[in-house]
Length: 173
Picture 1: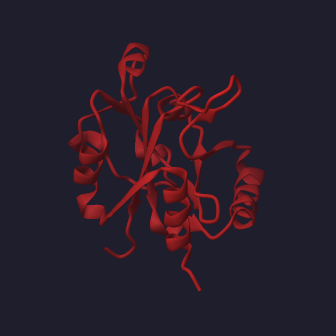
Picture 2: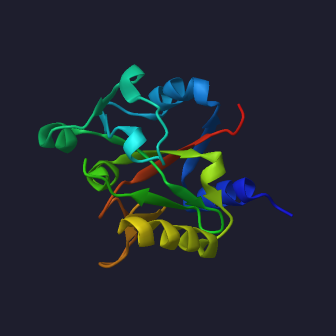
């Protein structure tokens, strides 16, 4: 039986999403390698279930001004969950407007802890239902780069990033 991580990575590949993995100790280097400057982001402890990784050791401007956001090429956020069978990312909205950082850039880099990959949408929705019942929270479920064919040919990046890269932080590494 295929592991939920392998399923997730296969789904990402089918969507044209690049993926890398890293131990937590090397996360700053992985983020630095994945971004195209100028890069903006939000404090990841706000977007990844309480994890305390800091973007301070990367070329990412944290909590950007509107001007920095408009000029940014890459946005870096955490992902609350990964959905194995779709390659979707659950992006929790924060007071720092994480949705702007993930949607208004050409390249979105999402950091996801391996333990937060769920096998399928049913498992992810059940977990979100439990969380949001307690907190009245909300989230975006993003699947691959933005694309539309509303006016004819397929256009990427019309309503969000043209490229998505997921960094999976390995368990126990």
